[in-house]
Image (cartoon, one colour):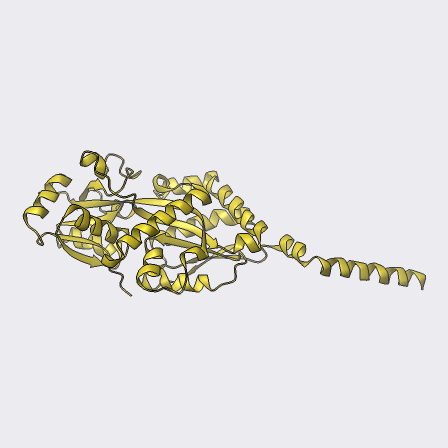
Length: 328
């Protein structure tokens, strides 16, 4: 009888200790089961490829599977809205892309706010560039610009609607007085097909996508401040035009979480950050990046610098928002 009483007291004390510290128990168990990476784009695109490649190695260090959930629609607004309404518990990671992220907020009254997202890292900065066919009569960017100025509203320039290419087109028009006929497309495949079919005089593309037309087309200039790691011999705008600066623009793909996560669950935020950095440094992942030709545009700049870059892109979108063509 005495032994039963002692056992009962022990079980009672154990139960009290468990229920008295649910936070510690929860922290010890997380993550359990799986973590989801929400990608607001269709499967098969460049953002999706980046996310799937990363997830395979990140889950090794996180200790649970990372499941990809593609929620495309409305230039990423559908998936981003879904993510913004999920609990800030670290069970879902967000993969976003600028300038689509900001353009939805500034031009289409998205139901989420810029500050609801905490960017862990802008992982890829893909250069924006002017491209013509190999047999084009425009042998360099200066001859192309001269032709546009001599024939206002005549030359046809193509780009993806609502993206960084759209911003680049606006800058060329407003800041450099280039009056060309704009033709917009929903995706990069359609854009590059139009160039190859000679329906365009030039296109505004991005390095990782333009690899597919290498050999048939040539890049004249990088519309940004840094050369492309994929096409290192192509000059920047400042190099081609004697120091004239083009804004720091790129197709910027980033990993983010809810901004409340750091405050509500700091240990979960830190674990996500630490395991993410481990994945980026994984030798097998680095080999995957080389094999998939993502290595030259891949980087780790961290949460603080990423926040600064992300804010500067948001401000650039706000400046040119009236000229964005976002197809919903």
